Structures are given as C-alpha cells and as structure tokens.
Image (cartoon, rainbow, N blue to C red):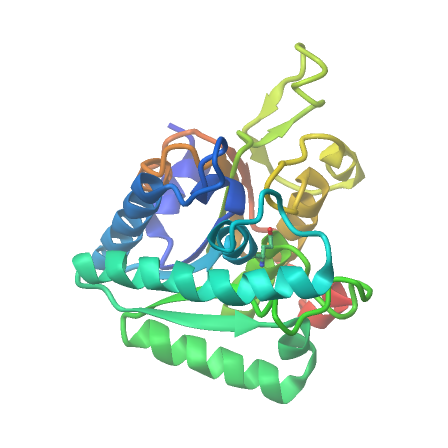
Length: 282
Ligand code: GLU
C-alpha cells in the first residue's frame, strides 16, 4: 500500500467540501437526500473516531432556486442572493435534522473574503472554529452569498467554495482537505476529449506543469473548475495540509480514503516557510 495514503489515517483535523453538483439530482435539481444522509453519516463517524471535521457545503443558490421554482440557475446578482438566502436556511434545516439523527451537533459559519482580509474578523472566525471543534461540533461553512457581490472583482468575494475551503483549511491549520466533486481527480489531459489522458494519483509538488493541467473538466452545477481546484491545492499544501480531489458520487469514499484507498488525486503537503494566507487572497 502507498505510504502517503496510509498516513491519511493519522489526520486529526479535516475539511471536506461538497459541491452543488454532488448534493442535487442532475435531472431535477432537487436535493439528493440519500447522498446528503450518507455524507452526514460519514462525517459523524469521523467525529466519533475523534477526528475534528469541518464541512464546506455549497448548494444555497441551487436549493434556493429550486425552492422558488426557478427553472435554471439564476444569473442576476440580486436574484442569486435571494436564492442563497432561501436556500441556505433550507439547506441548514436539512443538515440539522440529519446531524441530529446521529447525535451530532452542527453549526453554521458564513464567511466573506473580508472575514479573511480583516485581521480582527479573521481572528474572530479562527477563535470560533477552535471553540466549536473543541466542543465536538461540526461547523458547516458557506460563503455569505447574500452580502458577497458576484459582480465585483475577485477582491470582494471567494466566488467558489473550492477556494473558500482551502482558505478555511489554512486558517484553522487543518491537516487534510477533501474536495468532493463530479470529477475523479486530475488527468494529464481532458479525459472527455482525449481517451489517452492518464490519471494522476499523487502530486508531490505543484509546479507550472501541474498548473497547466487545469484546463477543461468544468462542472455544470457548481462554479469551480479544475484550474480553481489546482489553485486551492496550492493554498492548502503551502499551508501544510494534504489535499484530495475525488468524485463525490458515493459518499462512502470518505471513509475509504481515510483507510488508505487509492482513489482521487492526492496532493502532498508542501509547507511553505512563513506561509502567509493573505498573499494567496489578493
Ligand atoms: N456559495 C454558493 C452556494 O452555496 C456556491 C459556490 C460554489 O458553487 O462553489 O450556492
């Protein structure tokens, strides 16, 4: 067995990110309750193993749009934000119910880019995470979409939860980030276009060659493509965490990965001396 995979068993603080495409049914856009239920069971079991867990969940806009009866994902900023307001509350209601089934306490943390750029806000967020994790709570994080502005530049918002999850990983000093998406991981080329594209199971160092593989492989429901995921890997690994990109079609992948199964692409921690998160945000 691969040493790097075996070491995943020793992770004590992990962040798991689930994208909108992994928690809704592709055909209808409705919430996939079976998947969510399995996800929550996996997370509660990790916590029962003594691992501190943070969930970064997208889906506010997708669930809100569905709830309001919109036939497609909204484009206009104010409507997106209205959807996020409806959907975030509804999503949390579903999560709360499911977590309660397994006797787990979940909480909600909504962040903006400002939370990270403002030192006092960042410290507050950090303190809250520490306190919650110490209490055995599973924080559920999303961007505060109702006040983050999609139209303004990347300076104003994270825009996608891949980036948000990498930032959270760095901020709380987590030792593993798992991005669950609708792609298997990193290929040498776009597998939809090139049948000879090879799968990369481990990335030891993120160099320019790896970064150039970020083309194509865009998901349909969420916002983060492979290029974004590679930037996340840069942040997470430089902060000292391992990161995995894996397909979230079967949530059982979470415990299998933690047991050393060779699925997805593992990016090995490559801690940067004097890592400065702000440098990656601007
Ligand atoms: N924050 C957005 C939502 O919850 C999703 C962003 C993303 O797709 O990564 O709907």
